Length: 118
Image 1 (cartoon, rainbow, N blue to C red):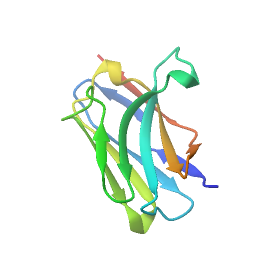
Image 2 (cartoon, one colour):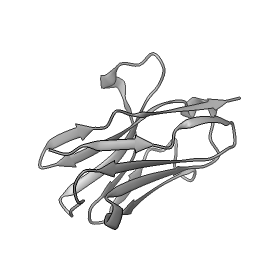
Image 3 (tube, rainbow, N blue to C red):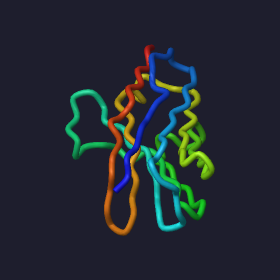
């Protein structure tokens, strides 16, 4: 099992930037994938939207809605995955969750709230 702690959320004006962090309680290996998901206000857990993912081997994928604006990266020495969010829009508002995937199991953090004002 793994514990995940997200941080970096907050209130920002449209066009602004934030950097989210997700620190895992154990090392990230090539067999892992770590991703960011967003749960918009009023949505249920099962409606969480995929935002970005990075594998332990360095493979990266983004949702179309954030391509060119968000960047996911990993610091293996710190067991931490980052999500740099630029040119934020009001529709980016939501709770951002980090997810650790390994051998068919998924673990979630508690989330960090991002609010983008217009």
